[in-house]
Length: 251
Image (cartoon, rainbow, N blue to C red; front, top):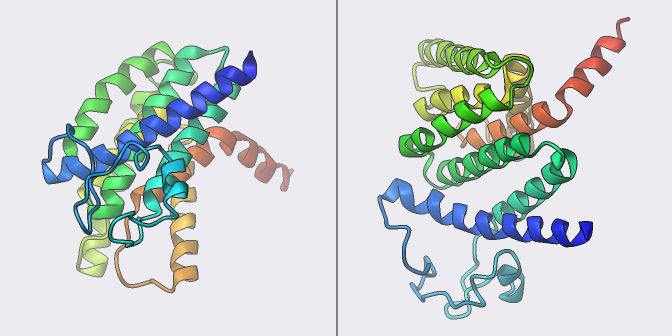
């Protein structure tokens, strides 16, 4: 019976991940969420087989059936990531369903804004406004330690990112952080609490640095939200373990 639930949760994550791709791509363009998707190259309307989350990409060999142009691997990767995070979170928190819902809400938010940032370098305010009240209410009912931890974490995350943004602009004479990244960190802080919000930023910055070194891209601005997503997940799932290990090296 457990395996049935695991498959169900994973499949649900794939399906929602596919929908989040659509939301992240269409909302910044003020497009309707209704209507079937089409190939961005030849505008062929996608069939039911094409739209099967993750596996549709595999069946098509990563190419449009009509024009044979490559389909962005971002689509299936976001679907797979959503499915895996839904599943792993369920395995860990199946006995605490409120906390599991918190994780699902946060993952949903981060997938949507990651897609928007990857495609347009935009974090839509409307998405943040939709998820904000849900995270506030859920964090009160499922606190990390105290009900106010999330609110403190949100204020600290926003304030710290805001200061970094101002300092970076003065130092580099251009925008160092997008306003969307700064506002997003209030929600990241709500989710993580003040204990782990700075840890998430450390992992996000570290991942961004590694990406810049590996790709050789050290001048052009890159979407930072996916790195924030990565840093938040690391801080949430293994942050305490890593901190204890690091402290143990000096004790």
